[in-house]
Length: 486
Ligand code: HEM
Image (cartoon, rainbow, N blue to C red; front, side):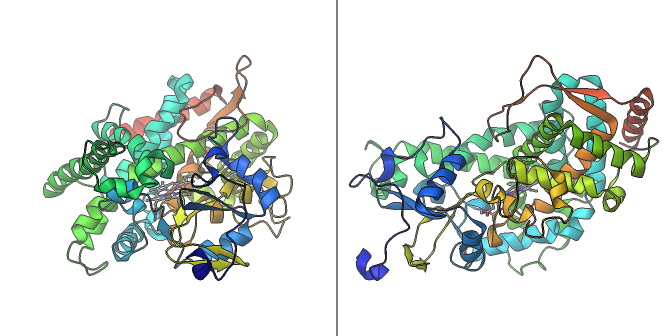
């Protein structure tokens, strides 16, 4: 069958496996070193496109911009499904990040883009500024809890943007139901997490049969989706009925209801799409902020240069706003460099092939899981010389071959992160304000990690030294004016 479908062409090369279980024994578990590093090493041996296989499931790993351009971008129409695991499929119920690239998915993306395109996102700038100023005050009060303050801030930005719901503390009820759903969602999209993903006929066996214990898990995932969709929606509708709501993703889309895609169930699409935002936004934005802070600690000369730019453009009598962005090139380089130097999703979110395909003489069968090693691309020395170094100046035009880090850090083509404009601006405004108000100094007794990885809850110590009593007073007075307008 393979010979007929592939015309005798080989699969992309890879480590030699065993019969049936394939590469199961070679699969790195990521404990010794992160997977993206192992994959980059293997790409030197097998080529920038290599593959591994187990129980007939093939994973194709793309380690170069050339390969992601040729496949995920140019042939995006056949490489935009999600991984074909049974669990992913069973737990996708209107959860669009897990959907294949089908009609329903396209409706969701249309709706999301209507409220998250670059011009719509500008309207949320005021929310991002206010949450940033509030975080500065929290950093003055309890700098040792910087990670928690930023978590609150990231949560409040996304819940205000989505539902006009302000988060005052991390015990907020919407934060809690969203946080509770995240681990299950991550497990649901991990192809190796359940036997039934490898042995699909298990789904037709009775509950007593070994390997069917995934069923309560799927129910839990689906229940979690319902909770995070319904709870804020009911509250939103109540407040809208009273006329007590500021413009946000949900209200903006409800005003356009019926005109976005023409479909009858547009309100359900708005509600279900809103429900995925917290989970997609918080850890990613927070991880990127933590990477920025780490970079400022490890590269104090960059921090000094950024402070000098902010001082000369913004001065000392006010805090940075989005209106300053165009005058702060070094700030923009620092944010791009953060996304490149320590991408928080180093292997992105895998896609899948919806058809058989041939690439440079290699056969890629339908259903293959496509992993883009975004970290390897963002550390390709042909585009980014001296790639391990945090070097914002690389973005000043001196390397014409350096493609914008956002083209890789946010994924590809039809699945590319729809929150990228919002995310970029969240990091930019927070980075500007923190460095303009504080000097970040490493803690002498605690060594710094070399990088930050997502979802581990791993953090590090950083001293936030306010730059002057006047700046502290400015933070207090700005935060007080926010409280007054609340
Ligand atoms: C710096 C922060 C962020 C990074 C690095 C990031 C990165 C990514 C990546 C790599 C993907 C997978 C793309 C692909 O499959 O090719 C993705 C998907 C997604 N992101 Fe983000 N993201 C960030 C912030 C956000 C924010 C703030 C939101 C919401 C406002 C968001 C919403 C989503 C959604 C809904 C998807 C799924 C898209 C789909 O399946 O079609 N992300 N993101």
